[in-house]
Length: 166
Image 1 (tube, rainbow, N blue to C red):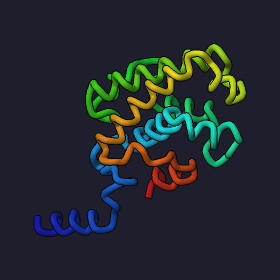
Image 2 (cartoon, one colour):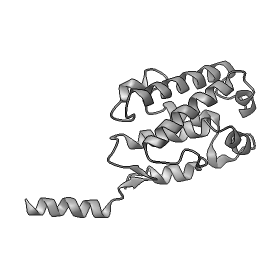
Image 3 (cartoon, rainbow, N blue to C red):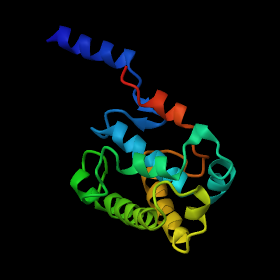
Image 4 (spheres, helix red, strand yellow):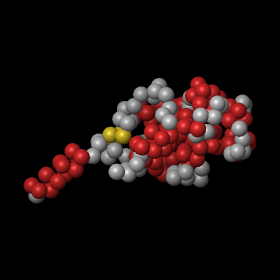
């Protein structure tokens, strides 16, 4: 038994215990959570959208990329975030906020089309509500993970490095 305890402690010593402030062992599907959080962060920040997406800064993807990250692994375009409480989301409060953001963003995407220019999203009459819903979800998830919600969104290469399997 002493050996097992030693092995466990040495494993902890070699692995990082956080991913950008989020405990790795806190949520079983933390990589999916990181993707959802990244998407919500970008969808929730109108200044970022003007300064990065409108100018075509490839390092941050575009609206369609953010939506894809939001629903890619989770299938949140097909079912509720409630399905992932305890794996991606901590509680029903997080799940409800994410569901609302997904519904508002997807409604616009279906109306303007996934290949529409960024300006079509930003000028859509429902965009401010989608941004607000994404903002509420982003803030809740960031605070629950002990992160600063006001920090600017990170480039996609940073997200990729943070979520690599080591």
